[in-house]
Image 1: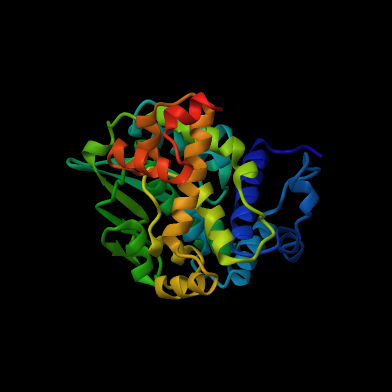
Image 2: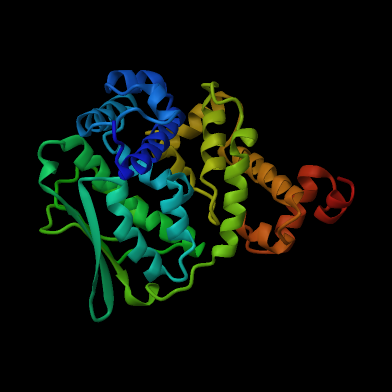
Amino acid sequence: MKISFMEGFQKKLILALLAYGTTRNVNPKRLCDLSGIKYAMLTQPPSKPIGAAEINSLWKNVSYLTNDPLFGLHFGESMQLAALGVVGQIVQTSATVGEALTNACSLTRLVTGIFSMKIIHNEDTFNILIIADESKEKFASTYRHMADYLTVFVVHELNGLLLEKIHPISVKFPYTIANETEYIRIFQCPISPNASEHTIEFPKGVYDQHILSADYELQNYLLQKISVLMKNSEATTLQTRIYNHLLSNTYLHTLSLEDVAANFNLSARTLQRKLKEEGVSYMAIVEDVRKTLAINYIDSRKYTIKDIAHILGYNEQSAFLRAFKRWTGTTPKAYTANN
């Protein structure tokens, strides 16, 4: 049977969705079985495309099994461009934000058949317009979760491309939002539900900013080693799940306690209490992740101490040097010389 060119990119997105569902304690094979998808098809060249009905069922089931009605939103917040393969590489190797967004808009149809995106330029701002086709009524779960996913993914990846926090001016959704507080937490800007168009508005100056692609080498290096660095993925302790989540979503800024708690569908207070019951604190897990990343970045012998300190979220190189000595009993220079 002939396979569409789109199928490979959609499969990458599904695999990323299953991987994220695993961090939320959902068995990927069971999820596929419930959704009418053959799990083996995702781990080898598929014999036929995965239908829109099966994908719609997948979104619906993963939201139910994680008890997270905002699964698409949280999935988009956690996913990295590298998970999209060639599509991600094209976006992240663009020269400017405007070029990256233009490429992303043109490639959207390779990832989803329901949506397209385009850029609208205004006098002092520009908008990313997210457009759904008529199939949104038939595949309601895909539409809602994918719409949330695309919206937050655009903002999330701008932060990654620039290695700094970029907040939209506003985000408008063409549907009702049940938990507006959670949307505001993620986007850090005014949210408008039930709008006539689905748009993300940014300051005009963001468009021409140059992408710091050199720092993406660090992220790519990490992604290549992620399976080795992760702790037992079968473990069900919250601290292990948080450790793996932080490790696989490393950006310049450390994810806040509130961000991580929301990812696991918990309040910050509940997450702290559960971790206390396991005999560990959130900051101790953050330190453990930073130590793991620092040692692996140094072992690669490709990056300066200044760059490593920067991507691990230290404002001053001296603070990173003190932390590294606390973790290992030595300095990065001495560590490199002895290894």
